[in-house]
Amino acid sequence: MAVTYKPIATVTVGSGGAADIQFTSIPGTYTDLKVVYSLRSDRASAIDLVFVDLNGSTTNKSHRELYGTGSIANSGNDTSLSLSYCAAANATASTFGNGEGYFPNYASSNNKSFSGDNVSENNATTAYQAMQANLWSNTAAITSIKIYPVLGTQFVQYSTATLYGIKNS
Amino acid sequence: MTTRIEVNCETGEVKEIPLTPEEIAQREVEAAAAEAQRQAEEDAKAEKAAARLAILEKLGLTEEEAALLLN
Image 1 (cartoon, rainbow over the protein chains, first blue to last red):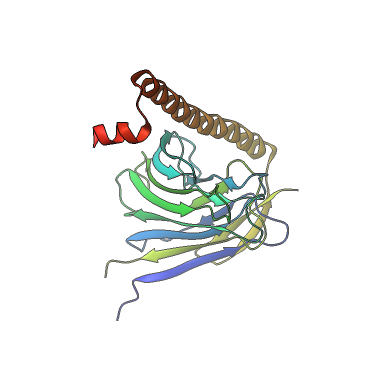
Image 2 (image 1 turned 135 degrees about the horizontal axis):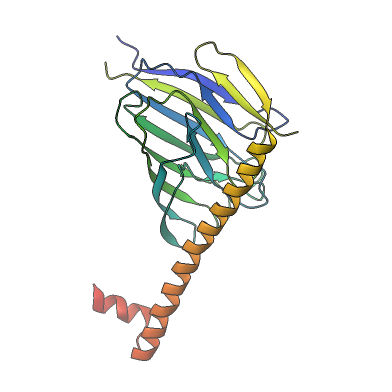
């Protein structure tokens, strides 16, 4: 039976923290990619935003999202690529926000879209959950993915991210 | 010193690399923009809720009564 869902690489943040996690030299041999993460940042808040850079590009990025905060439901859009949200320093101790991003046809010559769904995790009223639709208007194959906290300075120890390669046969 | 983690998916090599001053400056710009965007979304939502409440008060309706009329 063919292996269609393969872990390519996993990163676990050490005691010094990490400003970002970057997967580089991603092989173009899969159909889709998926990043699954468990993250907590050092921001003095219950939540942080997780942004994405593809191939180091800082242009032609956009996303739309739906999110709930525990008290309101809202939507937004921005000229960034986002996998928000994750837990931050004021969230319940030892909790980590969970989420994933799915990158279909990442090696194609079309513009790249990807989706995200995530929760911040917090044993309190303020706990975010969100879904995003992202577009990187660039036809290059995705060869690197960077995820980073936008409002905090780094992910804290024991944060993890795993990149999976998915084949359609 | 703030470092980032880079893993090479072909070789499995993992590097911890200090951020450059340019990268730190870029992060600060992005953080300010993201915070402003988030605040603008939540302000707009709050303004809309306040406007809705003001209309209901003018009409002498409760939220529940308005929901009954609209559904």
